[in-house]
Each structure stands twice: as C-alpha cells, then as structure tokens.
Length: 93
Image (tube, rainbow, N blue to C red; front, side):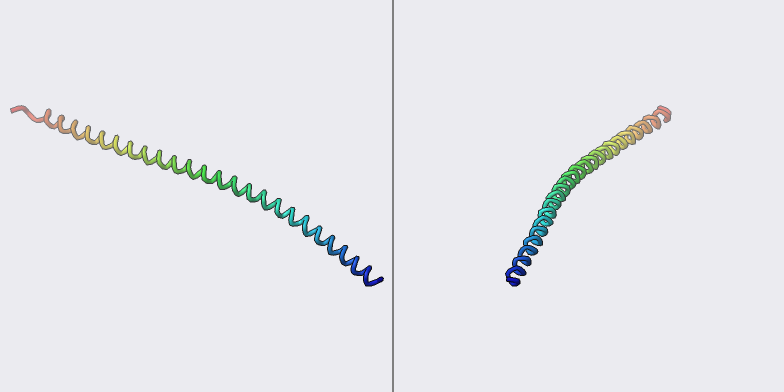
C-alpha cells in the first residue's frame, strides 16, 4: 500500500509540475504574440519613415536640380548682359 501511495503522490506532483509548465508556456506564448505585434508595428513604422525619407530626398534632388537650372539661366543672362554692355561701350564706326 505504501508503494501505491508513493506512486500516487509522485503522480500528483508530476501533474502539478506539468500544470505549472503549461501555465508558463501559455504565458510565454502570449508574451511572444505581444512581441510579434510590437515588431510588426515597428516594422510598419520603419517602412513609413523610410518612404518619408525617400520622398524628402527626391524633393531635395528636385530642388537642387531647379536651383542649378536657375543658376545657369542667371549666368547665361549675365553673359548676355555683359555682351550688350560691351557692345554699347564700343564706339560706333
């Protein structure tokens, strides 16, 4: 009878241990799910920010191109003005 009682006690201890393991595993799985959601949100935010940076870089390049184009037009106009002024400075013959 002692052997049967010992086996029953060990069985109960094992059942309690398994229940604790099950609860801990459920907690870990829930935490894992929460972390996955956090990572998913972070990745989404990162993609959004990357897209914003890319858009701002494209806008910056476009503005640089327009600035260079405007500078070229101003320089061309200055050259033309210099040519006109030099013609006006020459006496007519």
